Image (cartoon, rainbow, N blue to C red; front, side, top):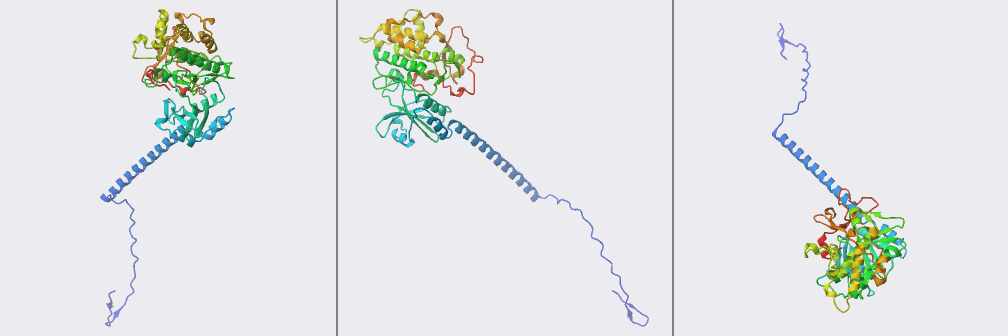
Amino acid sequence: MPRQRSAGGRTASRPVMRRAPPPAPVHHASPPAPTQQNGGGGSMLGGLARIITALLLGALAVFVWLSVRRKKRAWRFPDPTQELDEILKIEGKPTLYSYNVLKTATKNFHMASKLGEGGFGAVYKGVLPDGTEVAVKQLSISSRQGQEEFLNEVMLITGVQHRNLVKLRGCCLKGDERLLVYEFLANRSLHQALFDETQAMKLNWPTRLKILVGTARGLAYLHEGCQTRIIHRDIKASNILLDKDLNPKIADFGLARLFQDSQSHVSTRVAGTVGYLAPEYAMRGQLTEKADVFSFGIVALELVSGRGNLDLRLPPEMAYLLDWTWHLHENKRLKDIVDPTLLGDEYSEEEAMRVVDVALHCTQSVGTMRPTMTRVVELLTHGADAEIPEVTGSSKPRLFTLNNLAPGGTTLAWSNNNSKIDSKHDSPPESEEQEGSRASIPSAAANLVEPR
């Protein structure tokens, strides 16, 4: 501080007052001006957010897919213990085989052991440790019907015993694997014996008649001999197996249904093989034992003629066996239907014409006009003592097509002459108690090969 001098020459000091510093100005915070560096950070954060969102959506989609897949697999193949409990309740329980035993018996399901393949799985020849030959059916894991067919067949035919029905020896359950074990029949199926280019057999007339009568007896037992009637639903040449003596045995009960005495019919979705379907069943899903009778009539014609029910290599008027037979009947030329290879010392024209008459009787358009299988056995075995009613043109089923039964192709069935086909109105009813998903209708051409 400056000092002031007094009159005497001395400097006098004066007190100085200190001032408080002014208050600092208050500045309101404002966002920093954007810079190039901050802008890059924002883009990185946005990109990261998009990546995280995509990953979350992807994870959610995978989770949903796995959940649906698990549910589907659980529907087809539930916990084996549930099925095992059902099987153990069956009277006359089937033998439960170890998976490893059957795997070894079939040489690990090798192609060389394969006997054939159908819609629900392949069949292999196997030899058990005790030397017993068996046929092992491995149900397809990818088949939605596999688990249903497994339980259906085990529960229906375990307690059914007849010399003209194939015997189920047992089964196997392991994880997703479902195996059915049958008696082994050396001559495979009637379809192979008649139509296979490499395995066809020369069947004389007495043998063909024996096969037909045995099949009729097996069906008669199913319809009338069991405690509860059974409708097979898929009678055809490939489901009639032949033992070493060429005795027939009806096989493949995966589509079979029980039929109570109090029921006039069962309404169900159509299942079976084209060309063998009865008209009332193909059009309206009305199932009775007369549907099996119709199918049997087709098999009878195949045995007499030596040709399949459908052969597109023939002229159009001859392509469908039943239609051609009725044409010959109307023109009094039924003898033309007989397989030329049958003609010889053992052939009986009277018996052959009788079989054709029975077949026409079985394939009439109205189910109630068809005979029972017990009556069919009588007509085939009692000769001239059993009179066969005359069939007329009004009984002839009309060939029609049902494009909705097979994707991508035309399927064949037969109808009453007075019936009109309308897939919107005549389609079989659906019900949770019925087996809508079980319909197994291959394309018409499949009948020229080994059907299911």
